[in-house]
Amino acid sequence: MRKTLGLEVDITGLPESPKPPDADPIKDLLTPRVLREPATIRARLRERGDAWWSPTLDSWVTAGLAETTAVLRDADRFCSDWRRLGEDTPDSSLSVQALDAPEHTAVRQVLVGAFRAQDWAGIEKRTVASVNERLAKLARRSSFDFVGDFAAPLALEAVTNLLGVDPPDLDRFGPVSAAIVDAMDDGLRPETAEPGTAARAELAELTGSWLTDAANHRGRDGMVDYLAAHHDGVSRTVLRNSLRVILHSGYESSSRLLGNALVACLDAPGALARLRGGVTDAALRELVRFAGPVQAEARGCVEDTEVGGQPIRRGEVVTVLVGVANRDPRVFAYPDTLDLDRQHNPHIGFGRGPHACLGSLPALLLTRTVFTALVREHPGMEPVGEPIFRRNATLRGVEHLELRLR
Image (tube, rainbow, N blue to C red):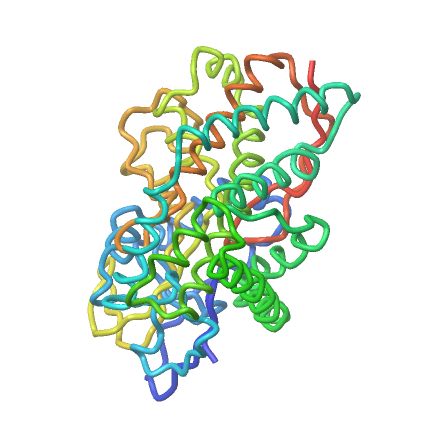
């Protein structure tokens, strides 16, 4: 069994892969020090070269921006659909994330149509109102948990508002969603795989019920109603699973980006003062580059090729370290510095190629709205103690950040 961040695949009958001469730094990705500040391990990861073998993950690893981008863009040689390597993938796992062309093209086009059909002016107006209302209530407290009391419920409200459904109970939804994120690290924590599978099935049942309600004319405006009526060429199973992906990633990625970005700004002298001049597009790009939650993705090699000067054979796994690539010193000047005016910023925080994130627009809208309100209404905000990070290497995020608004 070959494991890597975000997946588990069974590849047999291949020659033994090369082993590095020294300890595998991948093992340290879950340590509290690295979770708090990933820069503490990035130099060690980069020193190993443009592509190297991780015995921990039983996978090739890339950490440079050029190599990582090349793998993500090349869906002909690097697959997301493991059936192309002979894997027996159950229907319950097939979604926009786990398909390649032509099936991926069909479902992605349907989802893009659903995103474009939404009333974005209305969504932005409701988002601004919700952010301001929530912050006004929380400002009455002496302090509050920015993640649990604000970012998490706000992100769930935002993604379900986009979908056009009522938000599930966060006390129930949160642990289920977290189990899916934990399972992305099953290469480092094998015990998370089975609970993650059960959690994905539970969320798929929920999104399937939304499609049924919409088909029976019990829904309301939003992506679910649109997809129930416009999904020609896409099976209901793939549609249901893809909605599950949008729900989960919209909640987790948005809430984690908000927490990570606020910690980054609180850590960097003058960052919040700079944002009072405006949360520009350049500032948003830099927050995603510097504090984006996605740290790794995995692809399967479909044909013998080469990455970073290393021969990669068919059937081998390639894990791309997105977070490290976004700090590549060959591309980004002062890569470990948060520069909210950075102009040259070809980050891959939302991916690249055919599987690039569909939800970047709502995530950026939410981030801009939150930081605009924070720096305008509460310029004297300050943390109360140190942030606590979740034990996740693939999708980095803050678990608790006690914040005082002034």
